[in-house]
Amino acid sequence: MKDNSQQLWIYDTTLRDGAQREGLSLSLEDKLRIAYQLDNLGIPFIEGGWPGANPKDVQFFWKLKEQPLSQAEIVAFCSTRRPGTKASEDELFQPILSAGTLWVTIFGKSWDLHVTEGIKTTLEENLAMIYDSIEFLCSQGRRVIYDAEHWFDGYKHNPDYALKTLEVAAAAGAEWLVFCDTNGGTLPHEISSIVEKVIKILPKLNTGGDVGKSQIKLGIHTHNDSGVAVANALAAVREGVQMVQGTINGYGERCGNANLCSLIPNFQLKMGYDCIQDEQLTKLTPACRLISEIVNLAPDDHAPFVGLSAFAHKGGIHVSAVERNPLTYEHIEPKSVGNLRRIVISDQAGLSNVLAKARSFGIELDRKNPACRQILNRLKELENQGYQFEGAEASFELLMRQALGKRLNPFEIKGFQVNCHKGAEDIVSSLATVKVTVKGEDILAAAEGNGPVSALDAALRKALTNFYPAIAQFHLADYKVRIIDGGAGTSAKTRVLVESSNGQTRWTTVGVSTNILDASYLAVVEGLEYGLLLESLAINSLTASSYSL
Image (tube, rainbow, N blue to C red):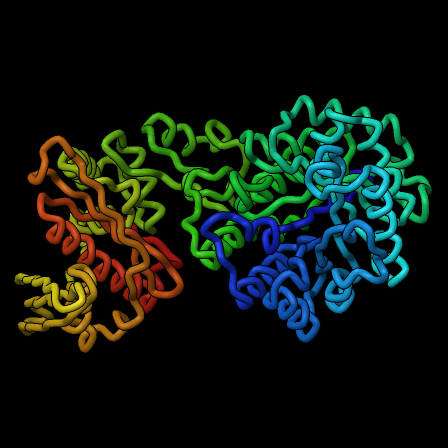
């Protein structure tokens, strides 16, 4: 660890602020899984929700009492007391105290507009609400983080009053004062200027000197409505704040919150701050992707640091340069954040791409091998027909193994037929029949599904599972369709990407045809074949070593 001046405290609010994202809904089990994942990642503060706001949040804090986190502080969240009441008598705080957390984050109004128009009270009463609420929680043995809601808007409109709300919170016993850009409308240069001014006006808040009943430190909480939440948090830290609040993958209401998956590597690898341990930082990418799975939102492939494409190289010149020295096109080492370098295969590829991609499959190819040029030419021919291998690497590996005479070909499809029927109450069902040859034996199988692709997949599984039991563990994880040449009308080509999984690994295959069922069939069949290839490689331990051709 560096000296304490280089320590940054990361505060995760995915389970509360992040859960306010439109289309995101977390079950109790989801929240617990995410909390344990964040704890394992080394996040020091995890905001669990607002106890009392709903039964699920109450149960969440109870469950964590039964099976506590290993290192993180779990934090309860709430507002100041209501106008015209006493904090000790306000029922709002009873669930907060019952949650049993050492730390409580409480938010109050910094913007006089919100005081008079939002909660319809006086500026003096708002100050009393802040003081009384924090003092009461401290009297009950709680340590308080004060989120100054709409801080920057409040400071711009009435700086004297905004500063007064901070002074009151500090005097009441808050240990952290957090500047919140709640509307997300402030720009980085404004963040820097305002934070700098506040630190100069209230020097004791920055130095940790005694103010009121505790030593005060400053934090930042930014939203992404102007697309600069990460930049705003970086700017505030440069001016001296020591706590950064944000969410995994930038989840949050409207346009989201500051993305911790971008902030943590920037702070730790670029600015020299300690956020989490280096070995924990290498778990960042897997953690972000796992949490994406838990919340049932597709991960952003182009996200900085943790995206699938963050260290992907497509142009032949780029690939050749990265092979010689990764610094030519990579700003950090991918493995430092748990990510991997990827060589993308497309019609822009050169031999360097093919050779590098082969190595990623455990295949060492000599540039002089005629198969290299054969693979490259076939790749460009298929992409000209509408295939897209940069998003379907499993299909490309099968193509490569075909050219090298190393494709398993575990079965052969002789034909298929799909029928759809719309019956009573507009219920649509599909029936697929497939004829497959496996190990010299012809198999005819039929199965139903709620759609033609589902039925086709089920029929193939039915035909093959007796021969290859591993197929029972495979399932379709995603299905994407794109019309390639829309101007051709109903005769347009369709590209289908199918993502398959065996519960541990995911892979994507592609099919292209003027018939959407045929395109789907091609992608589904290759998905099953690639899954069997992975099974074979695992059995023969070929994944741990490479072979030369």
